[in-house]
Amino acid sequence: MATFAPVFQQYFDNNGDPLKGGKLETYEAGTSTPKITYTSEDESTPNTNPVVLDAGGRADIWLESGSYRFVLRDSADNLIAELDDITGAAANVFGNAVVDVSTNLNVTSVYRNAVLRVDTSPITLTLLPAATAGEGFLFSVKNISGGDITIDPDLAELIDGQATLILQDGQSIIIVSDGNGWVSLFIAPDIVDQNNTFTGNNTFTGNNDFQGDDTFSGDVTFTGAVSFADDGELTINAGEITPTGVYHRVDTEGDAATDDLETITAGDSGQKLIIRAESDAREVVIKHNVGNIVTSDELDITLGTDQKNVSFAYDTNLSLWVVTSQPKNQALPSITETAQSSTSGTAIDFTSIPSGVKKVTIMIDGVSMNASSSIRVQLGSAGGFETSGYAGTTGEGGSGSKSTHSDGFLMIVSGNSSRTYSGQLIFNLLDDATNSWVGSSVTGRTDSADVYMGGVSKSLSDTLTQVRVAGNGTATFDAGTINVKYEF
Image 1 (tube, rainbow, N blue to C red):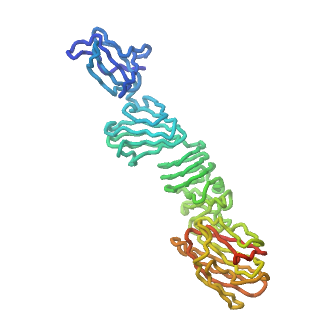
Image 2 (image 1 turned 45 degrees about the horizontal axis):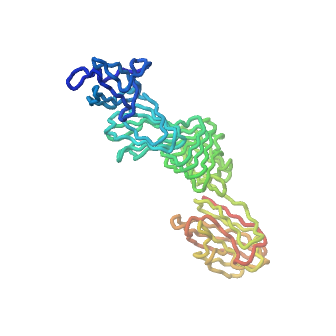
Image 3 (image 1 turned 90 degrees about the horizontal axis):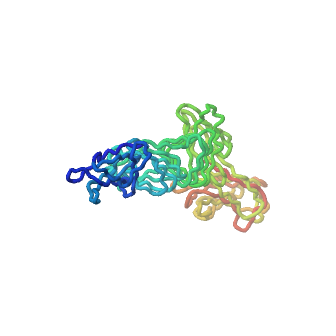
């Protein structure tokens, strides 16, 4: 339904005489694009454009929705007057028009009270100056593009105190000018009770509640509290989670036994995850060795009012979320690798030690070499195994012989093909900042009463990621088993 034009109720020339045969041109506000008017309220008959005035300088002009620019001329096309940004039917009502947006858009006064429905990404909505818009100017945006769109204020102006605002797929927002800058009334995510896939890098502001299965393929930042449904699945295919907020996983069923987190998966090492229980005393249970979660040895972690947070790091080599910190009075996990047979080769390597490890135990059982050789342990980082800088001594209790370390820690000073050995070497992280480790070992001959004991220190060039057990470089293993255990 049209509304009566609020301008030029009767039209006059510059002498004050009725504008006989005058012409009223009607355009989209701020443009030279013609915009239709009607002869009656029911919009059944459009006017000509321009509208030609009768002998009394009058015409019936009814406006459709949206905003107009009017240009009034006399019969000889001389300019009489011009007015812009005149609102049409219902244009002063919020949601007066729904505008589909598929390209970058400069938001002008034409879009006052409009709903911008964005169906393409990535695009940017550039705002007009807040002073031009005036206090109370508002419009809304609905993102159905499948990706991110950017809201960019004019020059140095801000929106919610930020240079830009990112609106994710499925979110809606109302944007309001205060005359100096911009504020958002709310950001409503349409992510409740549905499955969601988020592409690219995403930042979620405020508090978000995910009720379905959610897949992220890029970096994810949560700046507020985040809740995932008990029966939902969280999948991170690539990228990194930034825990600037708190990840919630809450037992809404009131049955702690159902909350085992077995569906959490991730794509690369180093990703971090924090699980937090709500403050309403409902329990969250992190179950050891269920799905891809590893806690303490066969010990579940129960989070509630007094014990709230547990942190994980993801290890690609193990395909496991590994607990890196947890509530007081609950042991941190220890992980034992698959034992390797030491019946061949000059070295046995373990290369899947995750970041955050504070203690490593190297165990040998019935190990022997095919020729006279020492048995040494070398530590390694991302740059490879390190073959210098080991300081310490190992001595043999039976013979009294001893040797200092150089290219590795000597569990066995010397040996021959008729001897077998069992024992362990324990390394502890001394200083995170310098990646300094200290170790001690006790190893016995299984064919006699001789015992080897020693101590060592070693500063690595980077974080510990691998361990090697080797002979002197030429002798090969011909019996026994070797394994490692690491703890956080």
